[in-house]
Image (cartoon, rainbow, N blue to C red):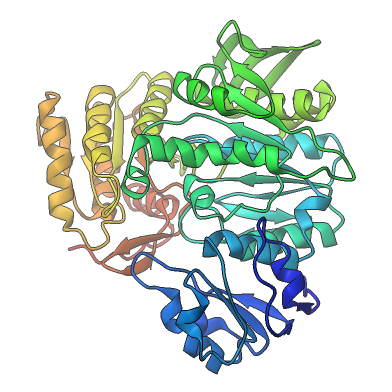
Length: 522
């Protein structure tokens, strides 16, 4: 990671998008921390009010560890006896993003930044854009929920899928600048947008894939969830002029009526649309699904572009169109480079990823963890086999409860056999989660023990799916994808569906293979 130079507190505070009083004493700042346990001498400590813990409680601890100054949302009178300068801000998370960006020298200002948001398809679309940029000969980096790619370095961005915190995001961008990159692709989740993880990223192009049912546990309402996604497009208008220029373009999915209708009236920048809709600016024609992937023609302003992709699923037509629109229309990249970039993307970890040990049925791991994503994954699975579709999935504890019913309904309608199992139950009783899902399956005509099963232990659920499979069937483990852990109680246990499925297949076939990962379920 880059090592920024010390900076005066007043210079840091000047990065905020609103005025704050000058510090009574200007001090050197050598780092920024939002966790008092990570404070080093000379750091600026940003006290963030959390859901369970208020960072203001830890200001004395941060100062004791050597914090040179403090930023928080409470009035200065609450910290009159503080031995270091204190500055009040309107939103600590927002302030953290601007302060860290300034500390790293505002790296996004020296990059062309493309942001991708949406409920489903963000990672795949970001990867298509990244591959098109590379095919065009551009020095590009990427920050996704799977990893960060900086030059030749590929860095894990964490166990569970969300945008990295603002300090990490800005550090990645600074590393890109230091490595001589010119373009960056950022996957912006609704949490990342609402929590200001991508604030101060100075987006030039914003892309939305779709907005469907997800994360209502956090956002509280469909309107708040939509508003979080819309924040990406609000930021396009806030991006200042850059030396290399910036297109300030919104790329909208004309087929996704919800997001299109919500975003269009609030846009302050130019918009371009994509989709199968006849009014889309960039459209797909002559779509064909083959065993090797997708074949279709992208038609846009001044181009007709034959495309082939190694990825399967009708939803990837939409993801490809979004990437082509952002790059060819948004950045003026040659259509031939888009053609090459789309063809070059072989697979996304945990996205319709085949696991093949020579078995006589198809085994797939997919990240589908929303009702819409599960529907699309199962519809794709239907087109990949003449046999039965066996789906294994769960629904997370302490998260959007309505998803449990919706996902069970989707699988009961589209899969031949559904196996309901653990998926990050956290501190909720797993049996209660599975009963909610089973009740929804029964309401759709599912018969327990015949068309659906409850197997709490995800290891045994995957093993059962493998045992049930006949020649020509398709087994799909959904919901975890590339993720590397599963949460029981408050503990994250190492877990990878791909390893588990390989282990189950090896056991079934009597072949050497990986050990089945441990889980604390009976």
